[in-house]
Structures are given as structure tokens and as C-alpha cells.
Image 1 (cartoon, rainbow, N blue to C red):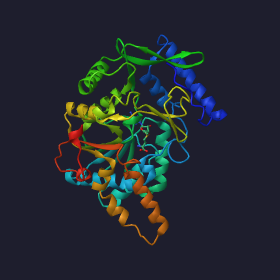
Image 2: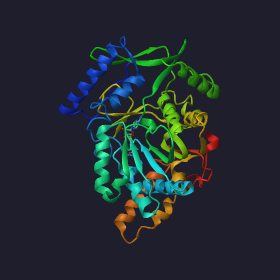
Image 3: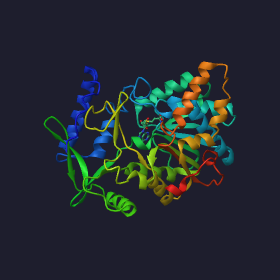
Image 4: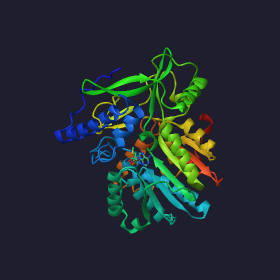
Length: 395
Ligand SMILES: C[S@@+](CC[C@H](N)C(=O)[O-])C[C@H]1O[C@@H](n2cnc3c(N)ncnc32)[C@H](O)[C@@H]1O
């Protein structure tokens, strides 16, 4: 199966192309040393995170207007201020604790969360950041030093998750969608996995047996819920996200894990009408479905199956304390009070804030597609962010 090339994408310049060629050569070597093919998950991991060369590990701009995509914390500080208020509520209930942000991107959410927590007088003991990208860790440090120099001493960068004993709040905004997924396709003889090979000087698709025994169970759970899937149906399973939830559960003694991302409960995610799955690439604000081109120069992402996240959490001993759409989470966390505190006579600022609120909450923008799930251990307070509407019943 070869997906079409998207000729309307802006061509990379010579330096970007040379960078991509280097990464393609590395992945090609990996394919050769694995009998001619690697799982798509392996390809995606290298395309995004190969040290010094992967999309997130190299110096490209990525976030914001000059990059490939924009995330909620980059759209408006109101988003991070709402997250900060939820953190304050939980830290107050715990009698103090730390924040750990995993996958902190440019560092803008860390800066705005800490600034708001400082303004509210509920700073965490430490604000830990864990990010696989050395390049982004450097960028986070620059952002924090520029924006909140007086609070930087509370920030610590980690190389791995703490093993145990963490008390506080774990934050993950658009982390799980950036984890490598396994691709499967229903064929006459049953589910097959999609692999990446090298053919005619470019990457090419192959299908073969499922590479991980857990995939069979995940696909069976989908069929249980939705009935038989037709031949040709293609989608993804994010085993890395489940593993991540388990590692977080292992280290969390008491507190909240707040995961924000685009996605659906299982029965919507794998609906027969979504027969091509949710895999998507972002390249200079163009969204397209071919992950085998512009390797290392574009983001590759898949939506999150929030039912799988909730199941992994419950198996690991966490409680699912809330699940709702981003719009409701922000409204429950005080978005409108914050927005209405702006001075209406400052027309420019007022208009900008109104636009930001719309982007964050309208169902035609980020409001409905993005969801927030709260996983907890050892706390039983009703969480403010889910007071407006809690949709756990849909998981
Ligand atoms: C799509 S970006 C989101 C960045 C930021 N949270 C935001 O909303 O702007 C994904 C981030 O997760 C990081 N990342 C991906 N997988 C990770 C993992 N397993 N552990 C830690 N960081 C990871 C990437 O380096 C990147 O910073």
C-alpha cells in the first residue's frame, strides 16, 4: 500500500532536506538490520525522537505560528491559568506537594502555571519537567528564565520518572498523542499489523502478523464493543500510552494526574465510519495523512483512546475522578471569571482575549475534540475542573 504524495505541501529547503535524508538513512539502516521491515511504531519513534535527528529532538521550530502546529498553552495563558487553579485546589487538599509536567514543549505552560500559582499564593515545592527531547529541554529553560526568572529555582529537569513517593499533580498536555502507535488493518484472514520497509529509494508499507501479543487483546476489545470490522479498516493502538499510565501509577503516592489531549472514548474512536484511523501529520500548518514523507520534518500524531487510558489507570490502582471536554474543564476552572476580569476599555486586549476563549472552547475549535481526564490516588475531593460537566459515563 503506498499512500499518495501530497504535492501541495511546501517543499523543504536544502538544509531541511539534508537533515531529513540523514534521518531516513538511519531508519533505512534500522530496517536492514531488522530483516527488511520495522513496525510503524518503531518508525514513528525514530522519526520523532531519534537523538539529534527526530522531529522533536532536533532544532526545528515546531510550536507556534512559525512552526507546524499550535497547542492550547501557546494560544492563550488562560488555558494554563485554569490548569494552575486545578493544581492549587489539589495541592491545598494534599497539604502541599510538587508538580511534574511530562512533555513540556516550549515551556510556556510551565511558565504560565507557575506564574498563576505564585499569584494565587499556592506555589508547589518543586515544578519538575520530564521531556525526552534535549533540544526542547534547552528551550524550556530559556522560556522560564525569560518569563519567570524569580521562580526558576523551583524548576528541576528530570531524566526519568521518579520510582515512587510522588505527591502532587502530574500534568500532560498533548503528550499521549505524540507517542508511537502500532497500526493495524483488518484483512480477510484477520487483523494484520502495518510495517515500514524500504523500496525504490523510499519508505513503503508492508503488512504482517501482529508484533505484540497485547495488540490481539486490544483489537478483540474493539470488536467486542463495536462488532466485526470490515476488511480494509485501518486504525492504531497506543500501547506506549498505556505503559506510561502504568509507570505514572507506580510512582504516584497521592495526588492527581491530569491528561489533556484530543481523542474519544473507545466506541467513538473505533467507530466503523472512522475506517482510516486518526493518524495525522502536521507540516507548516498543513495537516495530511502521509507519515512516510518529510521524515523528521513533520509531526506525526494519533488521537487518544481515553477508554484505554482509563482501563490502564484502573488496572494500576488509580481512580478515574473525572472526564470531560476541554471547554467544560476550563469553564469549571474559572475561565469566564478570568476573561471577564480584563478591562473592556482596552479594546485590543479585550478582543484578543475573546478570540482566545473562542479558540479554547468552541466546539468547532478545540472545545469538544480535546478532552481532560483526571486520574487520582488518595484524594477524594470533587475536582473543580469537572464541576461543570463530568462525562465519565461515556468512557
Ligand atoms: C505535542 S508536544 C506538546 C508540548 C506541550 N505539552 C504543549 O502542549 O505545547 C509533545 C511533547 O512531549 C514530549 N514527549 C513525547 N514523548 C515523551 C515521553 N515519553 N516522555 C517525556 N516527554 C515526551 C515531546 O518532546 C514534546 O515536548
